[in-house]
Amino acid sequence: MSAVLNSIKDSIHPHAPAASFGDNASGLSLENTGRFAANAKRLINCSAVDVNQLMPLKYKWAWEHYVNGCANHWMPTEVAMTKDIETWRSDKLTPDERLVIMRNLGFFATAESLVGNNLVLAIFKHVTNAECRQYLLRQAFEEAVHTHTFLYIVDSLGLNEGEVFNMYREIPAIAKKDQLEMELTAEILDPDFDTQTPEGVQTFLKNLIGYYLIMEGIFFYSGFVMMLSFHRRNMMAGVAEQFQYILRDETVHLNFGVDLINGIKAENPGVWTDEFQASIIERVRQAVEVEIEYAHSCLPQGVLGLNADLFRDYVQHIADRRLERIGVPSQYGSQNPFPWMSETIDLAKEKNFFETRVTEYQTSGTLSWE
Ligand SMILES: [Fe+2]
Ligand SMILES: [Fe+2]
Image 1 (cartoon, rainbow, N blue to C red):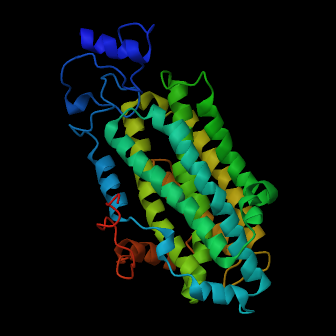
Image 2 (image 1 turned 135 degrees about the vertical axis):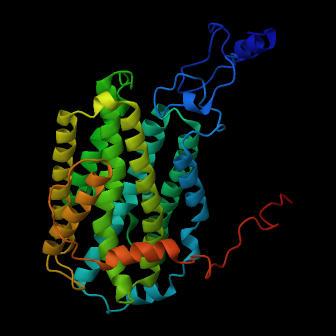
Image 3 (image 1 turned 60 degrees about the vertical axis):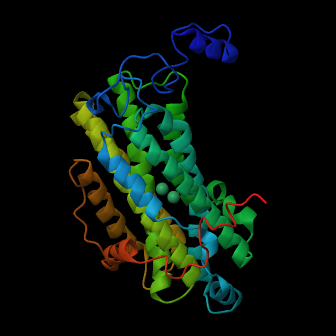
């Protein structure tokens, strides 16, 4: 190592050994080990010190998800809430309709933070690939935008923020969902955790499946159905539009998660045992029951043509679709009682969200410091 590099090291950490600042996950080494080829990259446990080098790309899907995420940029404050405020203050909504809205705001308001924290504190460190990290940074920002959305809705409608942001502790059906997720984050944050053993890789995959497939791919979807049902009735259109934006983002999050999980599987074939798959099925089945309980808590009597029994079929239907995407056999064979949701997802992909936009990004004003 050159004298210049040693002096940089000494100024940061005077007693550090001369070889390297850290492990491969941090990439804090300037030792010249030669230029690497794209095929030396690994999703986890990289062998080359490549976490700082985006190029050459190996996982083109990760870069494509990043570009798709950026193309969907939006901010909650761009959505007009005037009509929603009028409706919320009027007597147009029944107590049951208000309950559905409040429960979903309460669940999402903190679920978005749980996802963001798991991403930054648990996932990021162990994904040792620059293009995936580029996507994770974009996703982390989007989760912050989603949390911002719920604060914006709470503020606009004059809701009690203490009530909304504490539901994850105070409403048992929400707490059960979050409990399933929090224990997965805690496993990765254990100081003894690493991905060097097959068991470690399995624990990491369990976290990815728990967040990308179960939280963002199952737990979010009953809420999307309930809130988008208001949109179909032309009620609470501002709130529903924000849920549409979030649905569009979450579709990309889920797609990235599926590619990441399948990529880690392919690079570590020994971990995808029958026993491990059985544990995944068991966890998804547990999540489905918890989610059905959540639907019951939101819809004790049913509103807008929705009732809790329909959600049993819906949650089972989407759980099957998620399992299939990571090569696990579907379990339920239930029909989708809300076929219009597939249409809504397709529309969300195609809709030009920018046509009603009032704010321009990167105007000369925002770039000026004067
Ligand atoms: Fe989100
Ligand atoms: Fe997400």
